[in-house]
Length: 501
Ligand code: PHE
Image (cartoon, rainbow, N blue to C red; front, side):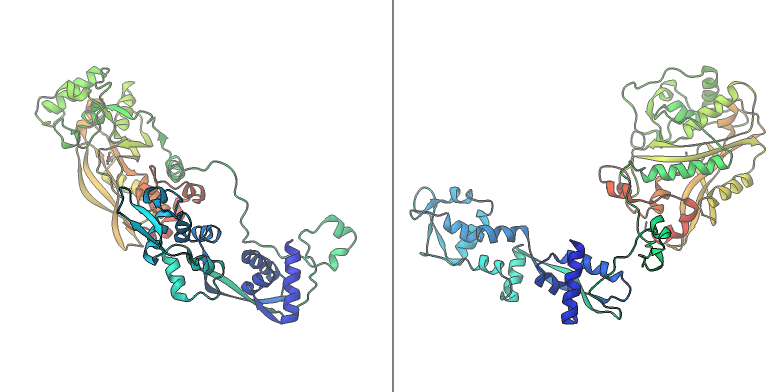
């Protein structure tokens, strides 16, 4: 079929010298897109034809317009539905899907009138016959004046579309007989020597492979995979993090966060109503935590308040993965012997946030923890440079910050080339002795840690500026299907021109 069409195009060009795709569609009685396809395939044959594309506006009949062509205009349909004795307005309006519009149009034109003298408003014909010029116009648009077309457009019966037209002329090697190009060099062609005279179709290195009918990973999973690879490369071990529900004890108290801290309020944290309390705690450790909060210990004066077990028992959706880091560090010391460790986790956390374009009530936290003898702030800065350089981020700055469980604490900023400014990407610090010593960690062991969200780098990587395009009911499955592989170290340069905050 296609080759038949290309033959017809070449024959036409042979006798007329030049033409265009729109004209060809008309005289060959073919769909314009098919003509364009045939011209494109002729274009691949070297110098056969020369093609110049251009675009032109064209009127197209909408589905509603097509309905009018078939059934008459809405006003004519209303007129024709009225019997000589008249009809109740309510009944008339139900006579077709467009009867309401038709009714008011026919009233305006004066084809029909509404008689309100009786109990029921009755519609009657006002003229003996009508000419449905709208239907006539839509059937053939050639002589319809532009102002009427604009009016039909307003009524959504016509729409203006831009179409790409191809102008074509004979090329230097024009011929009406096209030799079919070989696509494969077969063993037959080689054996009988026919390859010497054959012309081969050039390779199209830009052709995309057929898309696979398989599941696709969500961008967050792809970026998580990359972060996991970076941690593993740096010798980190993944912490178990499969517990969204946590007690306040591990989420806050173990981290030396006082019980009256605002973050422990229902405005910031989702508390669980059933089961609302946890009951199993390592009691000796818990007592040491109680002491350091209420009286102070290890050279710290503590917060000096009445620490309550009931407060620590309250269950919640964990607000950070640092609760798991605390559990892991406690576990590390349960056996009594300290060994240096490097742990990481990437998992979901929950905060009672006001939702907006950059905040959700649940998101993922990427967390790294390193414990060793005599670590310093210099070690933290060094490891952050190493970690972020693997993401393609090389310019970092640190700003003093406050976390109840770290001292010193630093917000991490990176330079964003696209925005040409420093933006915050994470939080970090050295765990406080008040957190570590109750766990029986040796006093000369220091622990450095940092955390960042997974969503922010993912939004950067995939050029999304609304977090709801990434998570939740508004996610476009096509986006998930089409988004490319993630290689973070290749990202930052590209990201930078795309990120808006
Ligand atoms: N838990 C911190 C947060 O929620 C991140 C952090 C982790 C900060 C480790 C310092 C050390 O933002």
